[in-house]
Image (cartoon, rainbow, N blue to C red; front, side, top):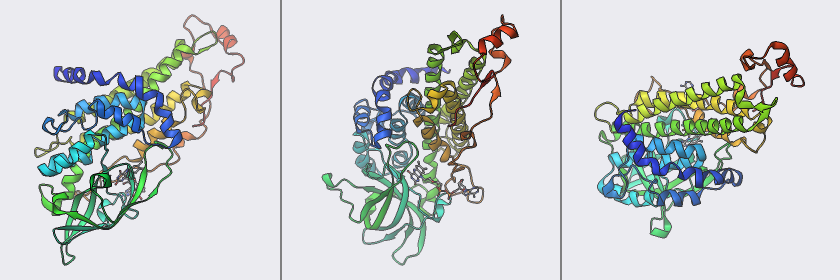
Amino acid sequence: MPHEHSRILHRVSRHRQRPRRQVRPRAAKWDRTRSYCWENVTELADAGIMGMTLPTDLGGQGASWLDTVVVVEEIAKACTLTARIVVEANMGGISAIMAYGTQAQKELVAPYVLAGDKPAICITEPQAGSAATQMTTTARRNDGGYLLNGTKHWITGGGVSKLHLVFARVLDETGAELGIGGFILCHDPDAGHDAQGFEVVGRERTMGLCGMPEATLAFRDVFIADDFVLQPPSGFKHGFADLMNAYNSQRVGAGTIAMGVAAGAMEHAKRYLQEREQFGRPLAEFQGLQWMLADMDTSVHAARLMLQEAAHSRGANGSPFPDITMAARAKLFASEMAIKVVNDALQIFGARGYGGGAAGTDVPRCTHVHHWRRHRPDPAHPACRQPSGDAHPTDPRRKLAPCTPLPLADRKPHENQNSWQKRTAGTPAGHRCHVIL
Ligand SMILES: Cc1cc2nc3c(=O)[nH]c(=O)nc-3n(C[C@H](O)[C@H](O)[C@H](O)COP(=O)(O)OP(=O)(O)OC[C@H]3O[C@@H](n4cnc5c(N)ncnc54)[C@H](O)[C@@H]3O)c2cc1C
């Protein structure tokens, strides 16, 4: 590891123990009760993790993307929901505002994020998912600002976030289209920011990360003053590409969550292998399981290196954001790797992996979120948002996999076949059965 990286790791090391002590014991509660982890958010804000990428003159720590992924990995090992909040309070929407916003906009949003707000990024619409540039939400020029009209759905944090970065089709007074722009909407009635015409109209029921609201938001003639328009360097015409460029940091963050979940599941499985005894010895002594663990560890580490490489990279033309190819590659690899590693971890837990106890069923469902939102470049629309990858509600691995013979390597070298067969008598004919996930 280069010297610079080890210094960064040292700098953030004080955040590394916190998740184990405080965040992990509460993780299952948020999913079970479908509630937002406000308790964790308060602690994260106190620790300076919310908005750690913000510049120091705005109260942040000036942390790099690399600092952030190191912290996110540790938190994701303990709680996916909390890690998700950390990503969105440092990367994505907030990073677009920090890169392209005016000083006044930065000074407005910084205190919110530092105090615990996770800005919501509002792009997707019922008829514009992968094809995000087909959005129909409009922002029409009107007397010192714009009137927002439309509906966004699947908005992470809708209903808990005060800050929103809303993407809309920009129209002039005559209705002529100028491009796609970003609009900062702050809904905080207690502080005098009451966005009239803005409403949370629904919440999805998700299969994982249940503590995070995925909401439908309606905008009916919501007035956004000029001061709240996020103007990217290339203006509205090509501004969408700039705004989406900021998303490369979020991609690295999302991939890191997947990798952290896999790393956490692997650590958990490793402990179990040492504790659980079968055939008169700890499971950890069986070489077939050692190989499985070695493969898991290798995959997690490969993803970690790709993500850290992407976090350290910069895009073309002086972009402050990670390189798009490195970010997309790392996210693709990490999200697919996580599904495999988590499934293997559940296999190691045997029946307990299928139950709600030690391993629980929450982890694989949470892992699918990051696979689900995989982004793949669409060559037909170079300037548009990278479309999401396969929505895959029924992963083939969820079926009952066929029983496979216990590998020969599971035998102790000193054992001859007969004694090994004797030891496995009573198990399903020396087979290991995969659990149904
Ligand atoms: C948990 C979660 C959180 C989210 N959070 C946010 C958020 O905070 N803000 C936000 O704006 N959005 C959010 N989204 C929405 C997300 O960005 C969209 O779901 C995504 O863009 C895909 O759109 P869609 O679901 O409409 O799928 P569709 O576009 O309808 O795609 C359906 C399937 O077709 C495939 N497909 C589509 N086009 C092509 C093509 N040209 N070639 C091949 N395959 C194709 C897709 O990969 C997918 O498998 C979230 C989604 C989820 C699940």
